[in-house]
Length: 227
Image 1 (cartoon, rainbow, N blue to C red):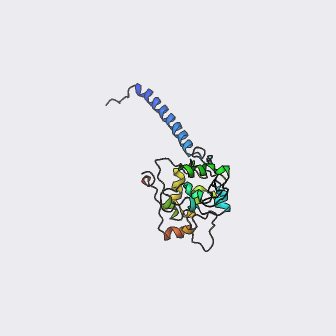
Image 2: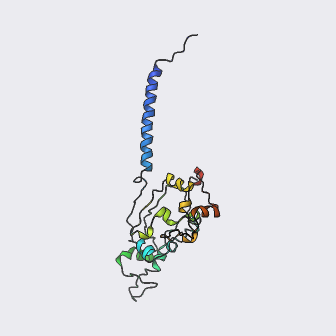
Image 3: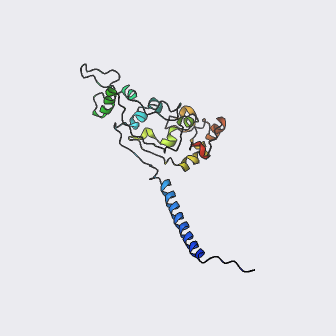
């Protein structure tokens, strides 16, 4: 039986195919490096806000609970951006005619609070800039995490020490999956979720104990976040 021989053009095709594979490998490696690089993932992103709100002052020095402003975090998927009315509870503008304020008058005449006072008068929302902004194809539920004992600090860092808020973690898919595979380092009693300086004591349950007690078993399949 005669030996089968491939046409000569197959040799050129194999060279071309090898080149395509090599270029594809370089492209995939470059793309993979870019989408997992901390700079690409916005670590350190720190936009300028219309009002210089200091979390270091409010959440740190004054010890205001995160839920005072982000009041939906335990009930909803999204942590609400505080409405102007929340700010006005403390920073009520002074009435030009009477010189009196309707509510608390902390720095009532400060120029820095002008956008807040203007929003209160006009009904137009303050144009706050989102700092932690996941892609539209990613679903994240704040309530599911905080009610399981995952503190704000795990994703947002020490907000109570930030004069200007910035993105402290990369918030990548690999970063999230790593936590889902082993959530125990991030688990604490739910009552301490918003206490950002909390440290586990000998009397506190371990993350493993909390995981077993509350039957916490995070999933890692695609449908959990990509719905």
